[in-house]
Length: 131
Image (cartoon, rainbow, N blue to C red; front, top):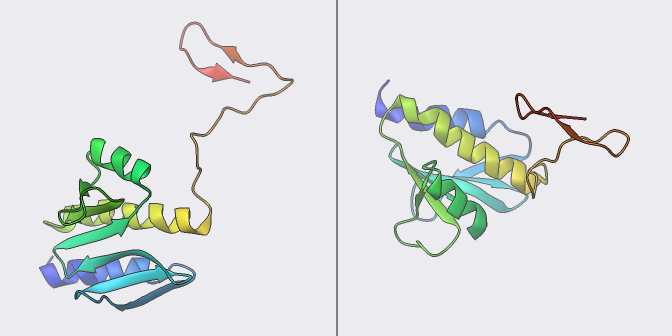
């Protein structure tokens, strides 16, 4: 896939999510906003930059899902370098994560197991939690 098509593919997908506005970014590239809050932006077909809370940024960087932003390493900003079409799903996942977070659909804490009758039983063989 030609490099220019990588950016077009990301814009096509992210730009069609409910409430997302697509515009030019002040430093060049394409910016995505939801309710006037930036979800993130693309620097052409080379890199995506997204703002997250610092705690979430640390988690994304330590998991190898993104890099700390080169110019703003001590903030919540992350970067993802787009090298080929194989990077597009990971970039879209980051945009989706931030989109869901800004919509209030992203969990603030890890999901907890559903409890029935106020008991939680751990299966000794598999370690699975059963309610």
